[in-house]
Image 1 (cartoon, rainbow over the protein chains, first blue to last red):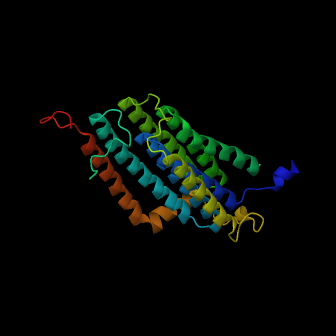
Image 2: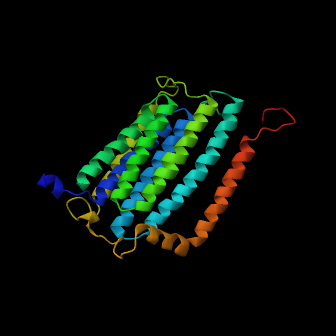
Image 3: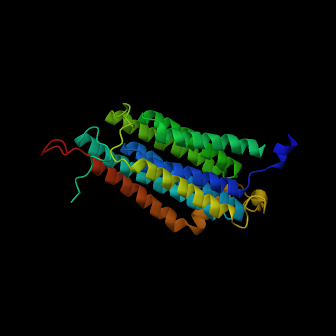
Amino acid sequence: MSLIAAVTPTTTWYLVLGAVLFGIGAVGVLVRRNPLVMFMCIELMLNAVNLSFVALAKRLGDIGGQTTVFFVMVVAAAEVVVGLGIIVSIMRRRPGATADDIAELKG
Amino acid sequence: MELVVFVIAAAMVIVGALGVIVRPNPVHAALSLVLTLFGVAVHFVALEAHFLAAVQVIVYAGAIVVLFLFVIMLLGVDRTEDITIEPFKVQRPMALVVGVGVIGLVTAAVSSSRDAIGRGNGLEIPTVTGDNDSNVRQIARSVFGDYVVAFEITSVLLVVAVVGTVMLTRRIKSGKGES
C-alpha cells in the first residue's frame, strides 16, 4: 500500500495517455467508413489534445492552457454542428452512403 | 490514491476509444465515446481543472453525444456496419503503422524530455492553484480579461455555425422538393 501511495502520476503519464488516445483516434479516422464514426474519432483526437493542454497547464502553472481547452471545446461544438448538418444533407440524398461513396468532386 | 484514480480513468479512456473504432454499430460507438469523455473528465478533476471537467460532462457527454445519437436515429443508420469488408487492401496495415508511429514518436519525445519519469516529479509544482483563487475564478479572469476578444469572436462563430447548419439542412419547398 505504501508503494501505491508513493507513486504519483506525473505530467509525462498524462502526455503519453494523450498520445495513445490521439493514435487510436487517428487509426479510427483512417480505418472506419461510416462518416458519423469518423466524426467521433475526430472528437477522440480533440480530447487527447485537451488532456495534454490541461496536464501542461498544471505543470507550467499557466491557466492559459485551460482557457485554450475552453476555446477548443467551443470550436469542437461548432464543428460537430456543421459536420452533422452536412452529413444529414448527404444522407438524405443518398441513404447509407459511406465515405467511399461520396466522390462527386472527383475529377 | 492518485495512482488508482489515474489507472482507472486511463482504462476508461482507452477502452472507450478502442470501442469507438472497433464497434460496428454506430450507437455502440457513440456510447463508447461517452465512456472516453467521462474518463477524460475524471482526469481533468485529478488535474484540478474543475470547471473544464464540468464543461466536459455537460457539453461533450451531454450535448455533443446526444447530437450524435440524434443524427444516428434520425438517419436510421443504426444498423450494424460490416467492417470485415476491406475495399482498399493496404489501408488497415498502413493505418496501424501510422497509429503506432504517432504513439511511439510522441512517447519517445515526451519521455526523453527534461521532466520525464524518474528525472523530475512533474505534477509536484502546485502553481496553478498557487494563489488562493478557485479554478473557476482563474478561468473567468483569463477568458474575460486577456482573451475577451477571442471569447466574443466565438459567439460569432457559434451563430454562423447554427445559421449555416439551418441553411444546409433546410428543404427547399418549391423546386425539386428534396434538396
